[in-house]
Image (cartoon, rainbow, N blue to C red; front, side, top):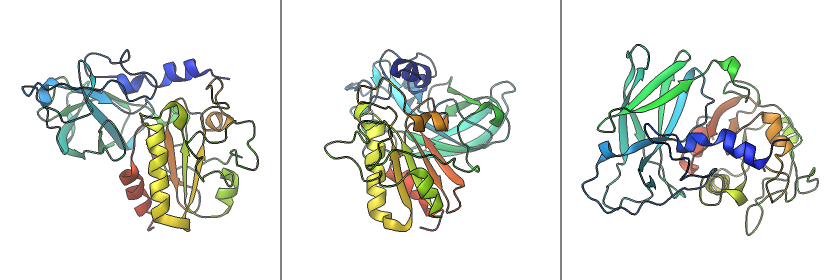
Amino acid sequence: MISRRTFITGSLGFIGATSTVGLSSVLAGCSGGSTSTTTDSVLGLSDLQLVQRFPQVLVPGNVRLPFSLANQAGLLTTDSGLDLPATLTAKLFNADTQEIVAESLSADRHDTGLTIPYWPFRVDIDKPGIYTLIVDGGPEEGAAVQVLAATEVLIPLVGSQLPGFDTPTFDDHRGVEPVCTRTPEPCEFHNITLNEALALKKPIAYLVGTPAHCSTGTCSPALEALVTVKNSIGDAMTFLHAEIYTDDKATTVAPAVVALKMEYEPAIYITDASGKIVERFDAVFDADEISDAIATLGL
């Protein structure tokens, strides 16, 4: 089994990957990182860095590229002296040919329930390769984006069937203790297994993440976002949550993670009634993005 140290070290470096200086020493695992308290009003968008908030599991198709902004001290968490924009615009280049792949890309700021805001760009990329995203008015060097061939990515992809698994439930923890690390009370998304949910022939929202070890970063906010969406959607779809580790010390990766071949956290899979994956959000997302994805199902 994979240890927590291996799991975090080998998979979450993308959170601190920047266009110039890496922030891995500032950001540990999926935590929120450092809080920038700069009041230097001279700083502008061009003085900041683009921070990848996605793992290296991108494949050709409609690609989601969430970014945050950082200075040399760490991730920015407030608008203090900076006036972080509500919307970023950008161009995407082929890094080898410098050909413009897409221009006039736009990403709105998302920060509902999160300490660190992010901007998720969406772009159609038709082939594997290395690309460069350059934000208008931002750092000249931009940020590198790698797109892999679908055969190189092991996790379930959008358009494929979500593989069934007997996820832990309140009635049968299946060796996962606790079955849910949300505090002060566990979430309600452990009443049935994923296999049982698929048999219901209803749309599914399936979150895999560990709130206890990611309380101020993305996992805990992701679960709270799912709770918010569930309260709005009701029983029109099935909501499930699975933990990353088998114990609250985070020493062993849980079977649910192995079943998905995940090497990062969190992730949420949204399926239609047939179990086909219509959306997968990686690493950082909020209730607004989840709701928008579910809305495409007519719910």
